[in-house]
Length: 153
Length: 153
DNA sequence: CTCGATTATTTTAAGCATAAAATATTTCGC
DNA sequence: GCGAAATATTTTATGCTTAAAATAATCGAG
Image 1: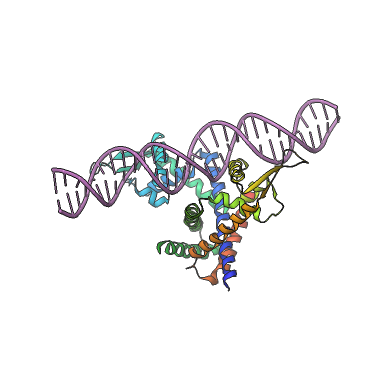
Image 2: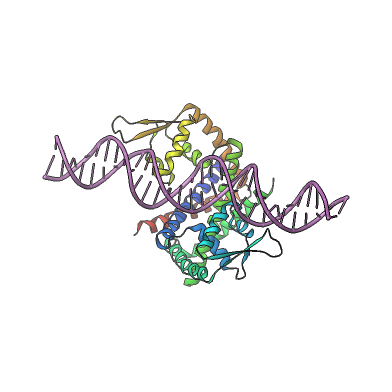
C-alpha cells in the first residue's frame, strides 16, 4: 500500500469510528434524558463509584473518565446536591476529598445501568454476535497503538 | 453465546469505541488549538464546504455533520466574521441561505487538512496497515446495524 | 386570495468540556 | 522549622451541544 492509500485508509477509519460513536452516544444521551432526566457524564461518575464500595479519591475520577478535573467539579456538585453521592474531606490530607455513592445513588444507578445495557443490546442487535470478539480485539489494538503514539514525544 | 456474555461483549465494544474516539479526538482538538487556534467543529464545516465549490444550503450542514441546527448558528457566524466563508440569502426562498467558502478560507482549510492527515497518520502509525480494511469493514457494518436499529421504532 | 401548516433558521436555557489561573494544603530540601 | 516546589481542587473564560421555543417566510387547500 502506498503512502497515499494508507492515508486514505486512516482517514476512513477515523471517520467511521467517529460516526459510530456519535450515533450511539447521541441515542444513549437522548434516552438517558427522556427516561431518567439524567446525563451520561453523571452516569459515568456513578458507574465508577459503583465499583468502589469504600469510595474513591476525587482526583481519581478525571483520570479514569479521561476528562479534565475542572469539568468534574459541577457534575460532582450536582450529584451531591441530588443525594446520589457524598463528598467528604480526608482527615489525613485536607486537600483530598473522598467521594462515595449513597444507598439511594446505588439504587438509582443499578436501575439506569440495566436500561443502559438493554439500550445497547437493542442498538447493536443487528451486528453479528460472532464478530464482537474480533472487533473488540481490533479496537483494543487501535487503542494501544494510539496510546503508544501519544506516549512517544 | 448466552445472553449474559453477549451483553458483556456489547458493552465492551461500546467502551472500546468510546475510548478510541475520545483519545484521538482529544489529541486532534489539542493540536488544532495549539497549531492553528482553531476548533474541530469549525474545521468540519470547512471540510464540508471544500467539497462544494458552489456552496451549500445552510440547512444541509446539520444533516451532514450530524449536529443540531441551532448548534451551527454561532459556528457559522464566527466563520463568516473571520472571512473563511460567506452566507448569502437565496433569492428564490428568503428563508434559505447559501454558505460558500472564500478563497482565503479554502487556502486556510487546505493547510489545516494537510496537518490533520499527518497527525492522524502519526497517531495510527503503530496500527498494522494490512488490517485497516478489515477494521473499516467492521465499523461500516456496525454503523449500518445501529442505523437500522434507530430506523425501526 | 387567505389562513393554517410546513420549512428554515435563530434564540434561549442548561449542561458539558477544556485550558489556564487561582487557592489551599502538603512535602521536602536545607 | 522555613520557604519553595508539588499536589488537589476550584474558578474563570470560552466554546460546543442539545432541546425547545420563537421568528420568519413559503406553500397549499379551500
